[in-house]
Length: 119
Image (cartoon, rainbow, N blue to C red):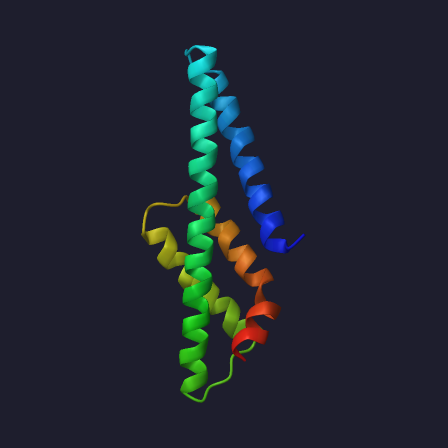
């Protein structure tokens, strides 16, 4: 199993547990609550995955631009790039700070893969 799959499973599980607790305490019927939980879990997982791949694509593009300019990218430079991209993702307002943080952590874990791809 890839680290991307583990990341999204963990993110989805954590989101579902937190949201489930909140929804179970809300004054709704069981059917409405189950429907809300299912819908929210799917939306959150889809959103996290979408923004992760968008951020990864942006990282690769920025590294290629740096490489084309004749500069080297090391791990520390990569981490700074990730922070910049994660901040841009957060500014979109469609992801929470927690999801943006998880995306950043996953991107940092991807260093070896991205290094093989563009360096």
